[in-house]
Every structure is written in structure tokens, then in C-alpha cells.
Length: 286
Image (cartoon, rainbow, N blue to C red; front, side, top):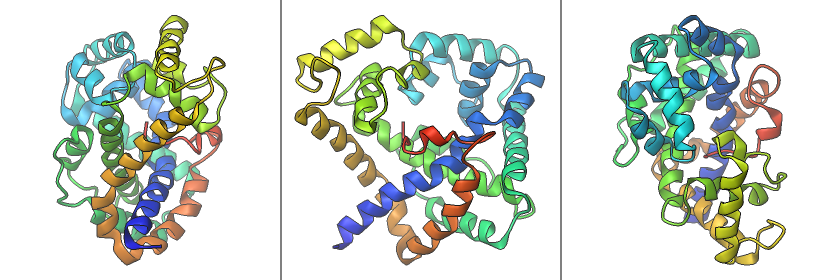
């Protein structure tokens, strides 16, 4: 395997490895309880907490940055959330929720967790944030101290996830609109149709219209399955996403195997009840 192929392989493995560490928070009962003390429902907590490092961004800005969600859903959540709390209070609740969830799932912090956090942070420290709004917001926050090991590890993973996620959005927006990317991703992931796109807030009529557009472009067949052209188009998005992650992977260098070995048991512990759903373990970057 030449260097370019190895880097691309590492980029995709990295996306899968950090996903449960970073995104488990969105399924965290501990974090949700913290948001509820601020008066927020689940959707307000999700959209406002994730965008909080960018300040109290208006809903149109959040919809643009998150990209894949139905705009009306974003409008209700963001407008409602910022009427009840502030970015500062919400970021504090988010960190507390991550600390409590990690403690519940992982037990006591270990040297391996600390080493994994250091490797992840080394990948993102000082990296160019151009065109990566969610990553830029996180990168502008203070790095958690070593005496807060769970939040340090979660933040390190979230930085890598949002760096990749920003690149993923840039990879698909030239080819798909926001409902189309979720619609075509379902058969590409090999999951039942209509089992994921609804989580982005789109209704049946919007999804049906998106499928019609994708069929008209020869990307889906009449049953909603990928054609050869559709598979190539969706895989192209993932390849470009991998390439957008290469600045981090090149920084990791020869430490890649060590990092993947360190993250594997942590990711497994962060997958399951109270954390990242096992049935989403092959879905990342969207």
C-alpha cells in the first residue's frame, strides 16, 4: 500500500474510531438532564449545544453549518433554545454531561485514555480551520486540563469529528441537497429505507420528492436502491471526505496504529445503552 492509499485508509478508520467517543453525547441521559435544567427539550439541547462554540448563532446560520437538517426543525429548536439559555451556560452543561457519561461508561480514567487524548489533540492543534466552522468554534475553546481527563478526551475526539464533518459537508454540497444526501446514504450504508432520513427532520413528501430527483439522475432505481452510478456518486463523497481529513492523518504519522489500538476498547465501551447506539456504528460523518 503506497502512502496515499495508507493515509486514506487511516482517514476513514479515524472517522469510525472517534465517532462513538464524540457523538455518544447526543444520546447521553446525563447531558439531556443538564439541558432540561436549563429548560431545553432534546432538539433545543442538540442544536444549541453543538453550535454553542459559535455563540448564539441565528437559526439560519445553524441550518447552514449543520447542513443536513430540515430548516424548519432547526428554526424551532434554535429559536426556542436561545430564548431560554446562553452559549456559556449550555457549554458548561455540555461538558458536565460528557464528564458524567464518560465516568458512567468507562469507570476510572486510565493512562491509555490520557495518551489517546494527547494523540488526538496533537492532530488538531494549530491546524488551519478555513472552511470548517464547527471545528473552528471548538478550536477556539480552551483545551480541558489533564485533571479533567474525561472532558479532555471527549473534546479531543469531538475536534477530530467536527473537522471531518465539516469536510464531509463540503464534499457533498456540490452534488446533493440536504434531504438527498440522507436519502441516498441509507442504501449506501445498507440500512432500511426511511430508517435514517427522518432523524434529519424530513417528512415523507420531502423524502419521496428527493428519491424522484435521484431516480431522475440515474442514481436510484425504482425500488430506491443504488444504481452503479449512485454507488459511485456516494462513494465519491466519502473519498473526498477522507481526503479532507488528510491534514490530521499526516500529523498522526507513525502513531496511527497506536491510536487505533487505544481507541478500540474506549469506543466499544462508549457504544451501547446510555451511549452511542450500536445500530449506528457504521454511520459517521453526517
